[in-house]
Image (tube, one colour):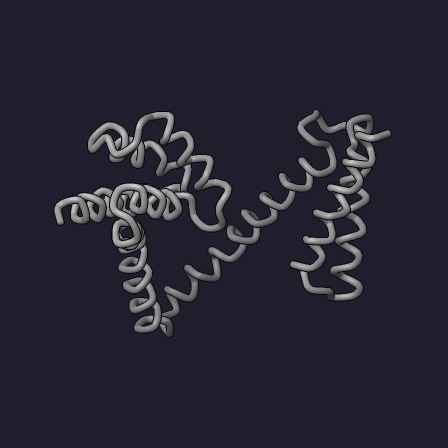
Length: 189
């Protein structure tokens, strides 16, 4: 029973103190699973990072599930995962309660409306950095460094999404297949 308590409280700390996303959680997870409890070796921990990045979902939650299943099977995975998401559930529930209770206050509406441009700017910044990687690869921004295949796929996908309103998942899948085909064709030529 103590391993379940250790798993819960270890990942509760990770969920509570890993502000900044999954990569910010990695040192906390390493501290708990490699150094404090020695559940994993450092090599296993690097494998954990790779697996957590490859699987869909938040890295910290994937790590908790992986460590839990490795240490105590399915009940361990459920315990560690619940410990990791519990702080977020409580905080979001409290914020939702406060929002619904005070949503009519003009001060709260002012704060939320002033946050909208910042959120739009963050999303636009992320989009532009992804666009930069697609068009120029990892090279400096110049016309000589334009990735032709990736840029054509991007432009076609953008037009298809805007003009024909197709399902974005279908368009992304087609883009992935087109990119794979184009790169395989370019390697064979």
